[in-house]
Amino acid sequence: MRVIIQRVLEASVKVGNKIIGEIDQGLLVLVGFEPNDHLEDYSWMSKKICQLRIFNDSEGIMNRSIQDIEGNILVVSQFTLHATTKKGNRPSYMKASPPLIAEEQYLSFLSELSSIKGSTIETGVFGADMKVELINDGPVTLFIDSKNKE
Image (cartoon, rainbow, N blue to C red; front, side, top):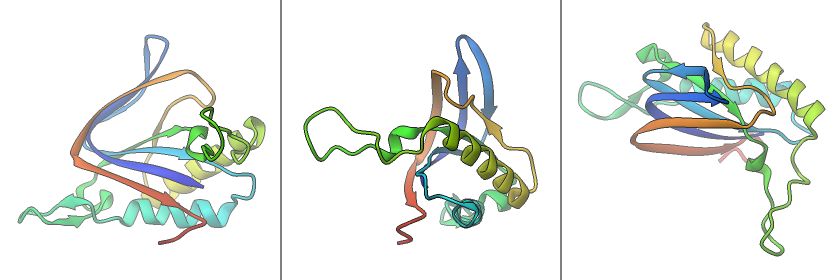
């Protein structure tokens, strides 16, 4: 399981011309799954996301979490996070979970994240052609892989 986390002042996701999910200050989380991702990965990643101290305190030091600031989270599925670009110029997505498995993983992850955060999580539409808009704050952008816990 891989995520890109962006600290945002605001973010939204559209399908067609309709806004499906939107947040003000918080985190935009792009998430992709592999077939061997399971509840342990979702739980670990959810805790990590909720506990990351990447928001500024009163002294301007990144020392506060999404929980501390009572911020929002917008999660958007993105299978391309598992692209392999080793050969040629066309990325391969063979490592990404097939759509039917990935959708179940996505829903399980959302459930776990919502439970740990203690509030509703805004989302896109799994498998849809989505347009994501954001104002990255900082900019602060992190990449986390549940199989490579650095």
